[in-house]
Length: 478
Image 1 (cartoon, rainbow, N blue to C red):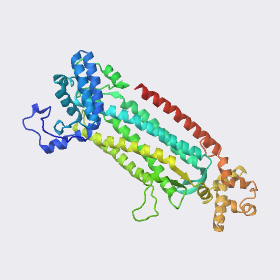
Image 2 (cartoon, one colour):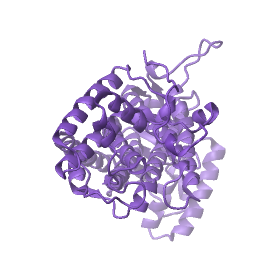
Image 3 (spheres, rainbow, N blue to C red):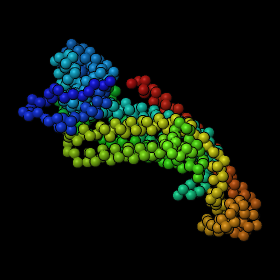
Image 4 (spheres, rainbow, N blue to C red):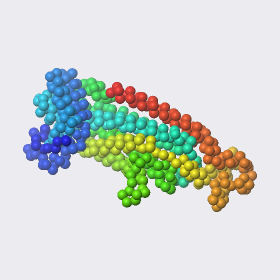
């Protein structure tokens, strides 16, 4: 069990002050309660900094050896929840530094040479977010694969397409799900682009103006796997654009998942009865024994607001800060950490849930027969016979009114009844008034013809396979 946080020792910067901070202020200003999540990344950054300091002659080889040995012990204590986190040391950085000094003496005090907590924490957050973003991209690829596989199984399953939640035109379930695949691919592209701006090294900027020590920032960049170094020390220590950008990308992703959630919830309701979500992803009612509630998509729909709220919080946090670092920035971590956790969990549960959905094909097809879904096809038929589209639109609208009064679909009207609206209508009209005829007529890239849907999904699955290969290659190289 993790040891209790204490506040017994003095602060590392207390030499400047004649009156100690109160216990309330200690608690109010401390971040160790949450930023200890950065501990292993703090150690990673410190070891790279120490290696570089030894190479430029600021640290001796003995100091470097002692630092490595001490950090190994601290890392083990943290991983086994044996590390004694101190409130008086206020944050993850000073807790680790104090423990290191207790273990190895003056070498621990020398580790902070040439850096500040300002560039240290900026580096730690980037290391943390890069690591978590790589995991999120993997989960997103797995979700995308699950969605595309599900869609491919239903490339020709007929369902109604909706606008304004009213039946519009026949489509296939595969085409509908492929729309979400497209959204998720764009999410991947955004995260990949965001990673480039995360992967820049602030360390070496010190408090705000750089340092007089002969640091080799390129060497630290290489040791930590960054792609570039920051180009301005003021910006480097105060910038949180990368966290805001990540939360923006995460918010867009959660909006996509929320839209999908809304549809799954509707489709599972008895009024639609299009699908059944697996029992493992639903719950029952404490009072109504018949209930099967789609809790996972409902909760994801709610959590999207939570993630969007974190984005708004970070934007507000940064909107009036002068250069350079301000204590306000301590408030960047909790929303960022929670966004990472929420998105990661949501992606994983959706990945599994989409593989455990049963489709009621008969109900979907029956629903597509309602609402005059082939009305546009009849208008297009008349246009191809030479009637201007606006005139064809009016003709079909009148035919729909008649069919509605009769309680039949358009293909339920006889040929003689249809000819009342236009003598150009012949018996071949019934080929376009059927659901299959409507689907197959939309035979162009991006449209809902089953062969086009199948082709598009095969291309999506091929891109997923390629992306997974690239992702795995990058993971193995780091």
